[in-house]
Image 1 (spheres, protein in one colour):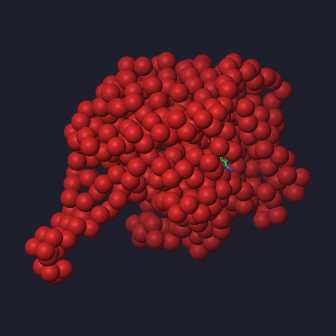
Image 2: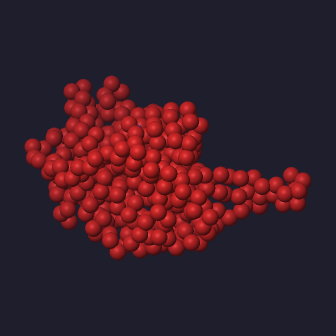
Image 3: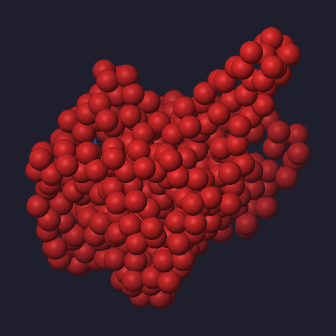
Length: 457
Ligand code: NDP
């Protein structure tokens, strides 16, 4: 993939970049290693001041940063501005809470025959972050803020279609005061990842992206005995039971499917509805989806912008065509529009069968699959009948059923009567082919810490 900014709303290539040479990458790794030695000697309070300075810069430059993101990957300008604000809050969250997350944790000294015993959380070194384009600032920040607070340094290999956003992240942390090299953007293609992760100075890797990229990085890291955190795809279920507030569920379902133009790993993708409320839900949901305005992402009145790439748009169109050819019913949308840019209308497809691609594959665009079930057990069977396990939603006002869903849904995140969202306060990650490890909260921060046992006799 060329490293370039191409506006998805027009298909126009705006700026291209040369990939860095091996020598330039080696020099960057050397700088990040030196920066790590400096950073680990700073206090958590000092690092917190730098991170708050980064948050202040994000707030001050929000509109311009958002414009770059919209231009590079097509999310609406309003969504891009909200993403910048969310990143600033995450910086403030970690600046404030890191001293507590990193504090020595006392253990029962008597039980282990010590005069003192405790756990100390220390940094592990430079971490490679391979990141996707869909939330080009947030995905990076949710790694970077806790990693830098812990005293690690970061090497970012961002998706090839968001180079300007990638470069502004490096600039942001430098201007915020972090030592030179503490956070470095490497403009390289994915073929460079093996060499970078094999470098002994790079201690771990985190990836948010596809299953294929996950397998590849996990193989390299396995060979090199390095820790990885993988956030991969998802095909999240959104279950609606008879006791649910159907109007509210249909409204949230629309946002849960179409946020970020339908390109979110935690978007609800499979809508599994009890037969008692199926018709009512289907009618409202399809009406809400059809009412969304598709258009220029910079326009304030637009709800859904273009897909980030032509390949991505053609892929979801092929998934819908496959379902229709095999007998599925389209309730709204379903036709690739004849216009410039990589647009696709919000679409609802029902009467799906296991023979169709949409049944088992992730659909990375504003296309919802609608499934009818006749019991709780069948809802769970369909919801869990996927290789993924990232997020899951259940809509029910029955307290007993809420408890059962929390236990029975096979996912890293279960949200009842609401859509899946990531919060700095809560761990985020998946099970099965959605990956392993967690980001955010204290758990995410400690993924890249040396959890050191200290025993003093
Ligand atoms: P990719 O996995 O291809 O891209 C994500 C990142 O991984 C990019 O930086 C990419 O670099 C890099 N990458 C890709 N292949 C490799 C590899 N073999 N070794 C090392 N790095 C690699 O995602 P796509 O853009 O193709 O998106 C398609 C699918 O990915 C979606 O359907 C979805 O499942 C998943 N995805 C999940 C996301 C999430 O939030 N969990 C976000 C985005 C995508 P480069 O751009 O240079 O190829």
